Image: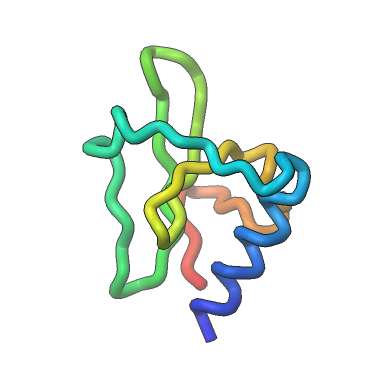
Amino acid sequence: MPHHRIKNILNEGLKPMDRQFVHLYEHKHLVKYDGKRNTLLEIGPINNDEIKLFRSKNGYLMCPHIIPSKFLPKDGRQNF
């Protein structure tokens, strides 16, 4: 079940960007995905900017404005 919720988040979140992921692989070392808890992790800031991104299960980084607000964690983490 958790996998379906993550897939739904990705599908809904990517529609505004025409299904284009945000690729920031040069910052890949800054994030880790918690596979045991199926957790979408919030990261930031990037390059001293106030930019926060979310790392999905498949390793892509997404801007919060393409993720429906009901799925955004308030404390930086969300369990599915």
